[in-house]
Length: 312
Image (tube, rainbow, N blue to C red; front, side, top):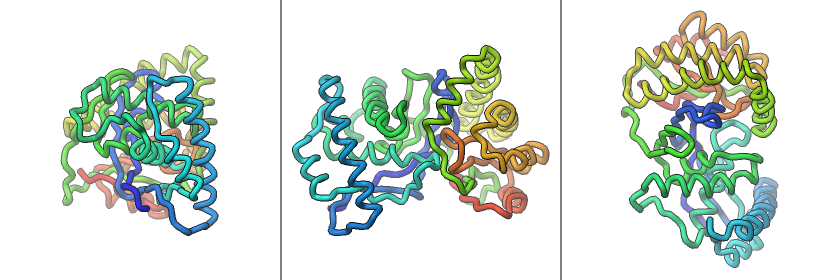
């Protein structure tokens, strides 16, 4: 059995902010992908994935009992396939902020939901919100709390514009320019990040009035401006707002930035060769970078592994 492929995603803008109703922009990233599989392979990775799926099925059964109107699954076939050793065969790195659990959630929903909203339908805002709600509940199994955006992005394979928590739409972004020197890139921190502890730190910080004000007056303001600039293709304005955003993150989200990258982060702001920001919840995994000149960025970051994901 080789199921359809589900891709990783990159939340370009909106990490943490979307919890507090900032705008956000999420794009599919086809470099990494995963699919449900059943074969005779009994590698440790396959066994581990199968064991996670067993726990996930129990969780979904409990959810369906608690929210029978939200969704329903074909548990007979799902359980039977898991018993037969089904696992999620994925190249998406875990703990890297590119949606490994989101792709798995999308794959299970796609194959086993009995009354599913399909990608081919006219996706009204109501349908998108319903899907996001379902996926958020499903993905909470992995993170404790989920917005549902990662699975939604993986399921639809379309860029998603988040205007606010209850206003999302699929969107188009300016087409890439193969000759463009500007780029969005991923920088590998070399360490795995855990979402739950990072979100916990954020929630603790939210108890401080100063932090809440900074979030509203600076972080969300610059995030919203970056989203608008990116979607509309206003590159000059985008980089001005990115510099501000990178600065705000360095000043206020230090625990989410691996310590060895603090200096590198500041160096980007000081030289304007590149600007770094969190990719997902931070704490490790990938760091997201933006540059107006990819050659300059590569030279400044020559000791690190860069992966270009989008060219301006």
